[in-house]
Length: 308
Image (cartoon, rainbow, N blue to C red; front, side):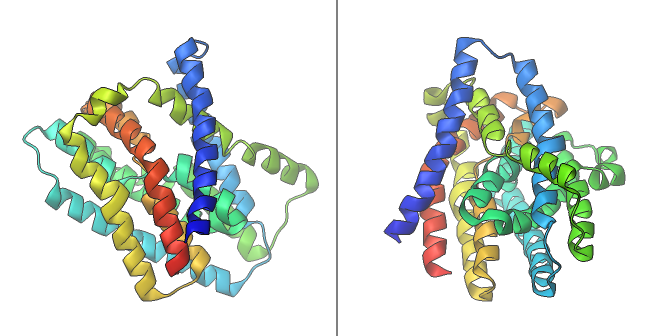
């Protein structure tokens, strides 16, 4: 297990060093918040879908399709359990704070941290199965997530569920996978170059936003404890137990475990700001959970590698 731990820790440290670049750019004033927001849009709408599409370009294999469907089903089950438990466990008299805490517990940084880590540890197969988690993640985020943050059912629309970049990337990728179609060289070259941004650019962005949080003050905020225990420890432990019980493909299991064990997603702060939530609390949850994940993710993933 020590070898597994050191391997995962090395990858996580690399990601945090990339975050440090964004942190330094923030502190030096060389990059504005508006520009960083535009970079986030590029990652979400272009880079992440390209990574997903690229991972699907392979010869059709019925076994891999079956595992992909397993991943979709398990991701749906995991998100449902996380949503129910978060609603039951997290209570607060302030609706704005409660909505942020519930959102932070359910939605990990599956795109900005889990996807690059899955790619680094497991290669194309890690991205392939991560795509299933991202599909369910997007469906829940644009339904349960928006409803939780806004309290307005009219904000949840089928269009938002169906046209999110992650889902579009999976649909295109599935067509390529089922038909075993390989795009021409020029298209593949573009996919390769854009996909290469998937690790450094998201980490740079997360580091930029980390620089805006008062970390020492955040650690003294007791409101952070329960959501972070759920996000970083309890939910990954429950997912690991489920995956051990089912005894399915180890790469698939590790990919899902990485996605579940990731820290609070940056979308928590974005949605909080958009829908009038407690943005200060959301930023602290993202910042502190991201820093703590440098310890929790290597331990959980190494444990999963040993047990699965």
